Image (tube, rainbow, N blue to C red):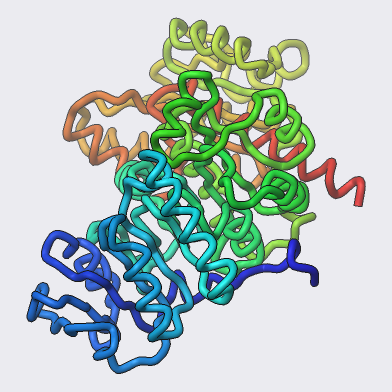
Amino acid sequence: MNEENKIISLDFLFKPRNIAMFVAKQAFSFFIEGLLAQGFNTDNLYLISPSEEKVLGIKCYKSINDIPSDTIDLLILTVTRNELIKSLRNILDTKQVNFIHFFGARTGEYDDIGLKIEDQLNDILRKEYPNTKAIGPNCMGVYCPMHNSYSADFPSEKGFIALTFHSGDLHSRVIRYGLSRYNLKFSKGGSIGNCVSLQVSDFLKYFNQDEETEIIALYYEGFSRYQKLEGRELFKILKDMRKPVLFLRGGKSNRGKTAVLTHTGSLGSDEKIWQGVYKQTPLIEVGSSIDEMIDYLFFFNNFYKKIRGASLQEQVNIYPKGKNALVIIWSGGIGIIDTDTLSEFGLNMPLFDGETKERLQNVYNIKVGSLSNPLDLPWIMHRRPDEYVALSKAAISENIDLVIMHTDARRRDKKSFDLMYDTFKIIRDYVESLNKIMILILPNTPTSGRKRYYQRLIKDGFLVYSDLRNGLKAFLAFYNHGMKLRKMLDTE
């Protein structure tokens, strides 16, 4: 395997056997709190501080020479930029270090002096210590459930979504918001900052063969100055990817490119080039919103958690093959708005007439509402639930790929509420038995009843969105990825 194609194992970055922090101090105790929250063994945590005896009750060593291990899997270097080069040389001359996290900022993104410091970091690692790899500077670090974290509020339960973000704040938000909104869990995550050593391509290669990862989310600001072939390498990797990569790019606008330079110092590229990359790879473009990224992750996660272990061909067969939608409502006004929205997004709404309508009428010939599409069924769920389910199933059995149903959290007695919930569950299970997709729209009203209802739906695996547009964007991203995978399999 040549150097370009080499996959760098990041095992000891995400799951280090030991971790050293220099310099340890109370201001950086969040690192320690994060490790403790994931159950990291403090016997293998080496805090180094010339002035502190303990931090959070954990012993501090006076110097790097005092720690009991000759090899450090992960070194968290927290010193200021003026001390960075000297500290790095002293540690690497003393210990074998597998991975370094350069935590501090004010380097290449800040000024010309910072750029020169990054140049020196790159030279030291590339020329003098090529076996030592690093993330940063200017990054929060890595997260791996039950092993490693820089924050105490990240979940310790494993999922199968991996993150690679140039921004530490956005990386943290996706983990926190994804957990609180959709109960998303993650396999690994990296806030990688200015990239003087490891690049985005290194993480994509690793995640693509990582058995714990099924979905990859990437926030990208541009190319590092230190890898002239990173663009070519990234394109090659993306063309070969089979796992979905959800891609949110910062710095699309001219003003945004300026902001990127002062954030991570990355070099952007032309929008036309990226549009070509989207067309030629399975890359899934996310708009300019973390909320949209989380919505997409929720949709993909809901799918992949049910088919883990399936072959690529089996996965492709389950992806939707069309964009025909059925809307089931209780209000004609909602149906009209939904029809306009679906048309705007390029989805089809097959009309039910002729033989199809006759079949629906034979199930239950409603007096108020409509047996077309939208399927308008006011009051029927609570008065004749069996007929409601039968009508829904009959309509879903037609040429339909996506089923959209509206619900709410209005005050109801428990019996009425449970009936509504159980009815939706019967219909959802039927939809999924046909390899189709069902989305529930639950308006985001600030009531305690809505919160309890929402949490119950999420826990039981429903796809729930507060707004139809959010759900449709996620569905189309999922549909388009399936189309790309089919095309790739056809050409192999």
